[in-house]
Amino acid sequence: MKHRTHWMIATTLALAGFIGSARADDQQDVWKVEQQQWKLAAAKDTSWIDTMVHPNLRMWEAGSPMPRGKASLQHWARFDNSNSTTLEYELLPISTTITGNVAVVQYYYMLARENHKKERESVTGHYTDVLVKEGGKWLFIAWAGGDDPKK
Image (cartoon, rainbow, N blue to C red; front, side):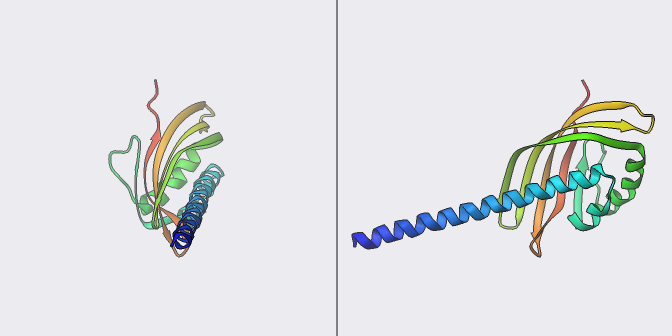
């Protein structure tokens, strides 16, 4: 009986380690998606919208009067890219929570950019992003956030 109990405890601990490891792998995969999206956006490569965004996207950017969808994101990306250039950025993860095929990522960013008049500014901000895993791939399905208010 004692041997069976030890075996059950060992199996439970091994399984918990495996699940924890799988969760950590998913968290790393999600963070890589976040980093890749910023890298492509900074390079003015809008292909990320087609490849990394779910068709049912709902996003609410700071300063926007209401949430928008994927079509609006695609529409305004060209204008945004012609008006601003990212010079440097840093992403600082705060938390990643994964339940099943849904991930919620919260992070802070620092960004240096230049507008079409060649005026430079440094800003900070934060996002809460929601990603869904479909077909083995993490896709953005919602986000809210943006630049912090100017002081």
